[in-house]
Every structure is written in structure tokens, then in C-alpha cells.
Image 1 (tube, helix red, strand yellow):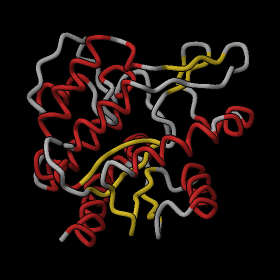
Image 2: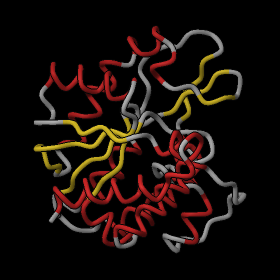
Image 3: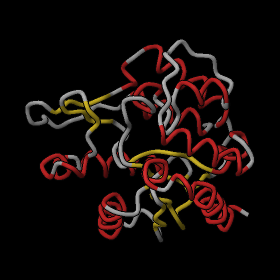
Image 4: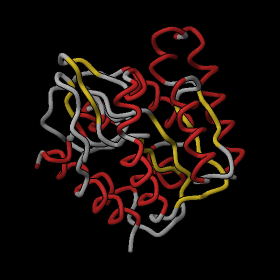
Length: 225
């Protein structure tokens, strides 16, 4: 079974099992037919093989990137320009996607990158509050309530064909802390390597962006070559 088909079966079956506090909503882009059609085209383009991949783990999808396209760190602009997948969504930019695709290009381009890596998130479904992005770790009740969902999602994704010697965490603060504690309990990976989050880089370290891109590529190359 190709890696792509594992992914598509997984995302199409995602349901959030916990009732959230009033004002907090789950963002599930995979319920949208247009999103699933794009995801099908994307994953079959880049993942139609049985190769093992290293996993890169974000926080949870945002409204203008993965929350629209269904593809982590991929906004409609990068989807069409870099991945060559025409789409009808408004071409709104998402900062994390800008950094990731500049890094992907430095690594060798989408074909070379996705041949080695699979990107997911601690929660593959997103959250909003008052029409704004909500990270799972910014609400303690939410963080506690998603644990069983997160563990189940990781367990299912590891069965796709994931290298277990290392995983890469996007976010070297709260996301890394949560993921490290979870990994200590469940032993998903031998080690988790923290990387500064793309949005943090673009928002607060823009002048050093090229240094971060070089660092990302160096770390990835240590494991993939």
C-alpha cells in the first residue's frame, strides 16, 4: 500500500472525539470536498511509493495554510506555484508556508523533500477561538483533553512507514516540551530534535532567515544522507 493511500485514509477518517469549551471550535479541513480533492492530488503526486520517511511535527493547522489546503505548512500560493497544483482558493499568504517552501527549495525542491519527509502536527486538526487560531498548548483544558486523540493519531501515522530513530519538532518551546513528555511516556521515537518554528522565524528573526534555512537543511541532511 502506497504511503499516499495511508495518509488519505487517515485524514479522511479524522474526527475530534472531545466536546470543547464554549467558544472553542475544531477546524477540520478534510470535511470539505475541494480540500480532500487537493489532498488526494498532492499526496498521490509526492507519496505514491512505499519509502520510509522521517516525520516533521508542527503544532496544529492554521486558518490560512493547512486549515485551507489540508496540507501542513502549504498555503494556496505555494500549493499552486511550488507544487504545481492549480487551486481555486484566494491566494492568501501564510508566513510559515513562505519559510517552509523556501527551505524546501534549498533542500532540493518538493519532489526531493517529500521523498524524505512527511509533515504532520501534534494535532492534525486545528482549533479556533473568536475566529482566531488557537494553539492546543495555549489552553490547558484543551491540552489535557486532546491527549488520547494525539496518541491515537501518532500510533496510526507510525504505521504508514515512519523512521523511528528521530523526529523533528517545529517549535522549540511549548510544542517541544509537550511532545517530549508524550514521547517519554509512549516511546514513539528514539529522539526528538527541536527546530525554531517557521512563524517565529518569519515574525521575529526575519533578518536571519537564511541562517535558519541553512540550519534546517544541515540537520535534515544529517539523517537523510
